Image (cartoon, rainbow, N blue to C red; front, side, top):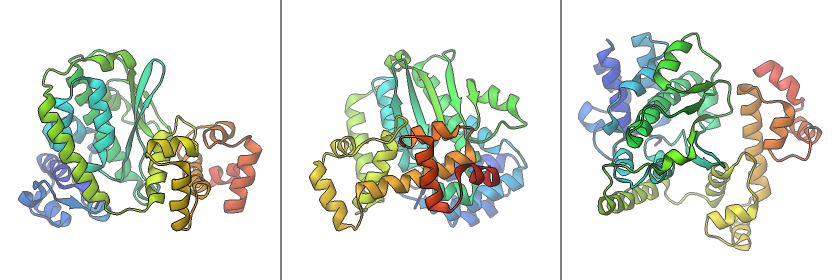
Length: 336
């Protein structure tokens, strides 16, 4: 199950305020209003897509997702919101946002990337979700961006510091509305959604910090994540870790093993038991990201080859032709 019920309930409530039939939307979700509000309620991706598609159709707002994120109460994030509000600094809050993002939306994993002068909160939708429901992904991600921008500014008690906002979608006709709500420098056609801010701002103290309560909430959140993930295959965990550690190139096996508190030999042995290998998993991710970068970004072939850790554009070209029978340029011409 991929989407938190309280998160979906907030979307339906907003759509109802804009004239949508809430009874129809709750029925499509498979839950009553009260059951969606329960802590453990989740929706499948298919159910969420169905609800969102009907919300967009009923409200007839090309910026529906953006407006949901702008208007949604910060408490709608539930446990995650409580955790970030009791964190000591914005830095700690951002780390927890990335760590526990799956509690709200498993299809939009979040990773945190530290650079010399900036920090970037990166949101990368799953390839399957994007390929099946690009409109829903764009509205959902725009809403998450708007919601997160509000939360970051509230936590830092400063509404004037600059933000860099990255979006996977092309520049929309409603660009002024995006600029007004997201309040940052916007870059469209990016390989993922992101919010970047100056690193020094993350030192800001949070007024509502509560160390003891934070420890309880974090423990509870980790238990919930463990319940959601269940006994997942190590290969899936390795792929998630690789994606989270991209800066922007793929990490090597030593970095991944260290991050997962495993020795390289132990990781290799366990992956072999699952009939896979680190190299195979890396190649699977390479393919996923290659398709995404070619279809949804303006990156050059040389830039894509670099990000995907190829020695040269020609090496990337050969691999892509082996996967698909066509060159990256031909694929981009048909799918972009």
